[in-house]
Each structure stands twice: as structure tokens, then as C-alpha cells.
Image 1 (cartoon, rainbow, N blue to C red):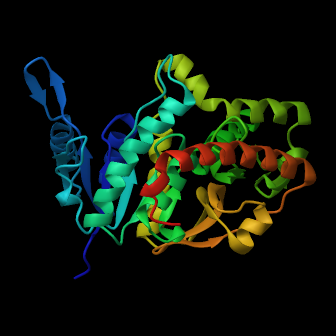
Image 2: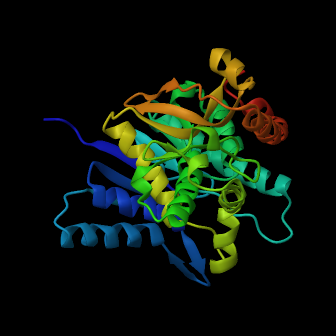
Length: 335
């Protein structure tokens, strides 16, 4: 009898709970969810256990056999024992950026959270594949790699799948076609400097530039880059349906060993790093995902204009990584 894979989701906020929900519905792995309690006066709530119970009842109503469990943990790392032997650990825990909070403040706060989680994953699930969702995701993926001691093939950041989905959405709306027939990558850092690769994007095999005027493509690129902000302005909070779906896309490729090519934030060095002009940090590029994690880094062709945008994006990530290096200091496992 083949053992079902176990996916642990650390952080049961908007993104984390939707990741758990989609995984439960897909039914290809058992799900464990972890989060801290919530205090309201003298009352202590354990929302992660309530969400797990609700999800159990949901899949029962849908006649799906997914096993779902919720576990309350403390901010200092107590309670993570049930993460033991997880095949994949998805980390969504972290602070969103609040008014008055500098980029450095956010970085420091989330590094502290990631550091606690990674120490427990190393202890209880040393063979797991890590998927990092916490922002700023390229930097947090690098931090997870440095603190875990895991090989770079087992530390993957979620960004490009989401950015590419946004790009495809806006192309599909413009052309009134199915997103299924659109092949388009967004690479680079997950931020304002991301790089939609127009030169190789196509719809049903027809180059995008032959279907949409250049000015309109630039409008679509701008909307893609600021797609997260557009949702924040509308909802007052950041997106969670699409980010969760992007995570599940990655998890499914790993669990089913489908070897899908998806844009993910990964550690670049050596030959691939040379091609992408990146030495020793994480940024988004197309990779082949299989049962063992990153099986291959794809060297995607870029025209000179895209290569220049790529360099600017990489430089933006590099500055954040240098700041993170100072903060993690001696905690780093990879030296």
C-alpha cells in the first residue's frame, strides 16, 4: 500500500487556509495546518483547530477522503512535533507590511518567524521540500535556504506562478480567449521589477506581439506588475485565492512527479547562475518540478530589452539579500 504524501501548511491566515482548502479538495495528500492561538481578553481561541474541523466536514460533505488536522503552536516554536516526516512544508506565516513599517522592519520581523519555523522543520522533517510564500518572497526563500541547510533543490519560493497567472488573466481578457491556450512566463523578483517575457509568450502558438499592439501589451505588463496592489486597493487586504492556487499548482507537480515547468524563486549559482548573471541568491526563473524538488533550472531565452529588465530586477533582490545576510548572521547553516 502506498503511503499518502503529507503536506504541512504553517500559517492559517487567508493564504494558508485557502491552500489547505484546495489541497483538501484535490485529495492527493493529507494536510496538517499549524498556527498560533488568538487571545481576546481572557479568552484564548485556537482558530487553526476550528478551521481544520470545518475542512474535515467540508470534505465529508464532498465525499473526499483527505485527512486534515490542525495544530496550535506558540510563537517561540512549541507544538511543532506533528510536523514530523512531512513530505512538503508550505510556509505562509508572516506579517504583512503595515502603515509606518519600513521594508527593514518587515524583513526583520519575518526573518524571526521564518527562523523559528525552519529550526522545527530541520528537527522534525529534515527530508521535506520547502515552499516559501512569506513576503518578500525571494529574500525569505534565500533565508530559508541559508537557515535550513537543505540542498537548493528542496527550497522553492512561490511567486512566478502567481505573477504568470495574473499576466495570463489580463491577456485572456484582452483577447477573449481561454487562459488554457496562453503560454506566458513572468520571471525575476516578485515585485515592481518583475519581468514578463513577451518575446516568448504565445496564444495557441501565435506570438503575443502578433496579436496585441505594443502599447496594449505595455498596459498589461504594468497591470501585472501592480496586480497585487490593485487587489489591496479594492479589498483592503492582499490577495489569497490566486496565491493559494499557485502554491497548490506547485505542490501537485511535486506530489504527482509530473515534471511541470513552472516559474519559481530558486537558489541560482554555478552554470545556471552564470547564464542568469546571479551568484548565490534566490530569484524567479522557470524550473522543472518533480518528486525530488527542482529537477532542472531552465535557461529561458531573453531579448536584450528583457535582459536589461532582468538585471534591474536581480539588482533589487540582491540589495534585499544583503540586508537579510546581516540580520541572519551566525544563524546561517549554509556558509
